[in-house]
Length: 249
Image (cartoon, rainbow, N blue to C red; front, side, top):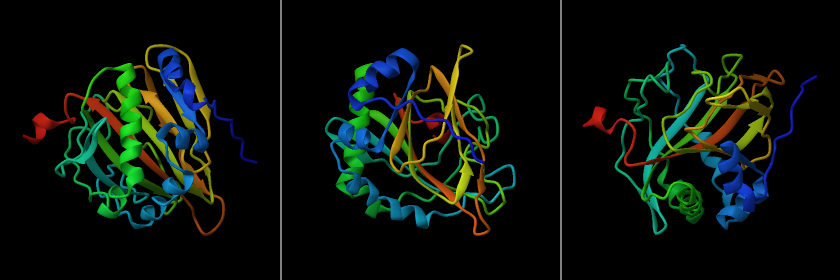
């Protein structure tokens, strides 16, 4: 028996109050479409690209369960402009396992980012975040992840519960196939309270105020002999510049 806990979904119009009050908000796919003024069909048109993600060669736990692509963008109300390709970098303060190293991943396919829904997604979230922290442009890093069970167990967050070192984080569930686990956990960064739930529907969304909460996803296991996987899109929004610009100068 697999026990799951329902997500505390919020209507799209209450996203900002939820982020102000508790530091996170969870949206259904329909609310995501409404918030970003797109259709679910538009969003789902992005999903096939997760079948073409290269293996992540930087996992320090020796695993081969993660595939990913990564690109960066300048985002404001008028644009979602692709930035020159760069390494993904985090300090060890935020990622004890993989921090302090420049990780060069293959960029997100141009056929994905040239779809109109991509820019609308990035801009709509940036507009909401600017209502909480008046700043533009946003320096956005986009990560396509596939966590599979090729090793028996796949770890969505091998670094454990963490913050990302940015201002805001958006985690979309793109798909789940033949797995159990992958529970989302969100905790106060400076307090005892937390919540656990499982996001299952494609294009459901977790929004996080990175300064106020820490988060993690539990490991996944296959439901059958054929293995399975969990696909996510993670967007991080940071004011003032990309992480590690000094390290890459």
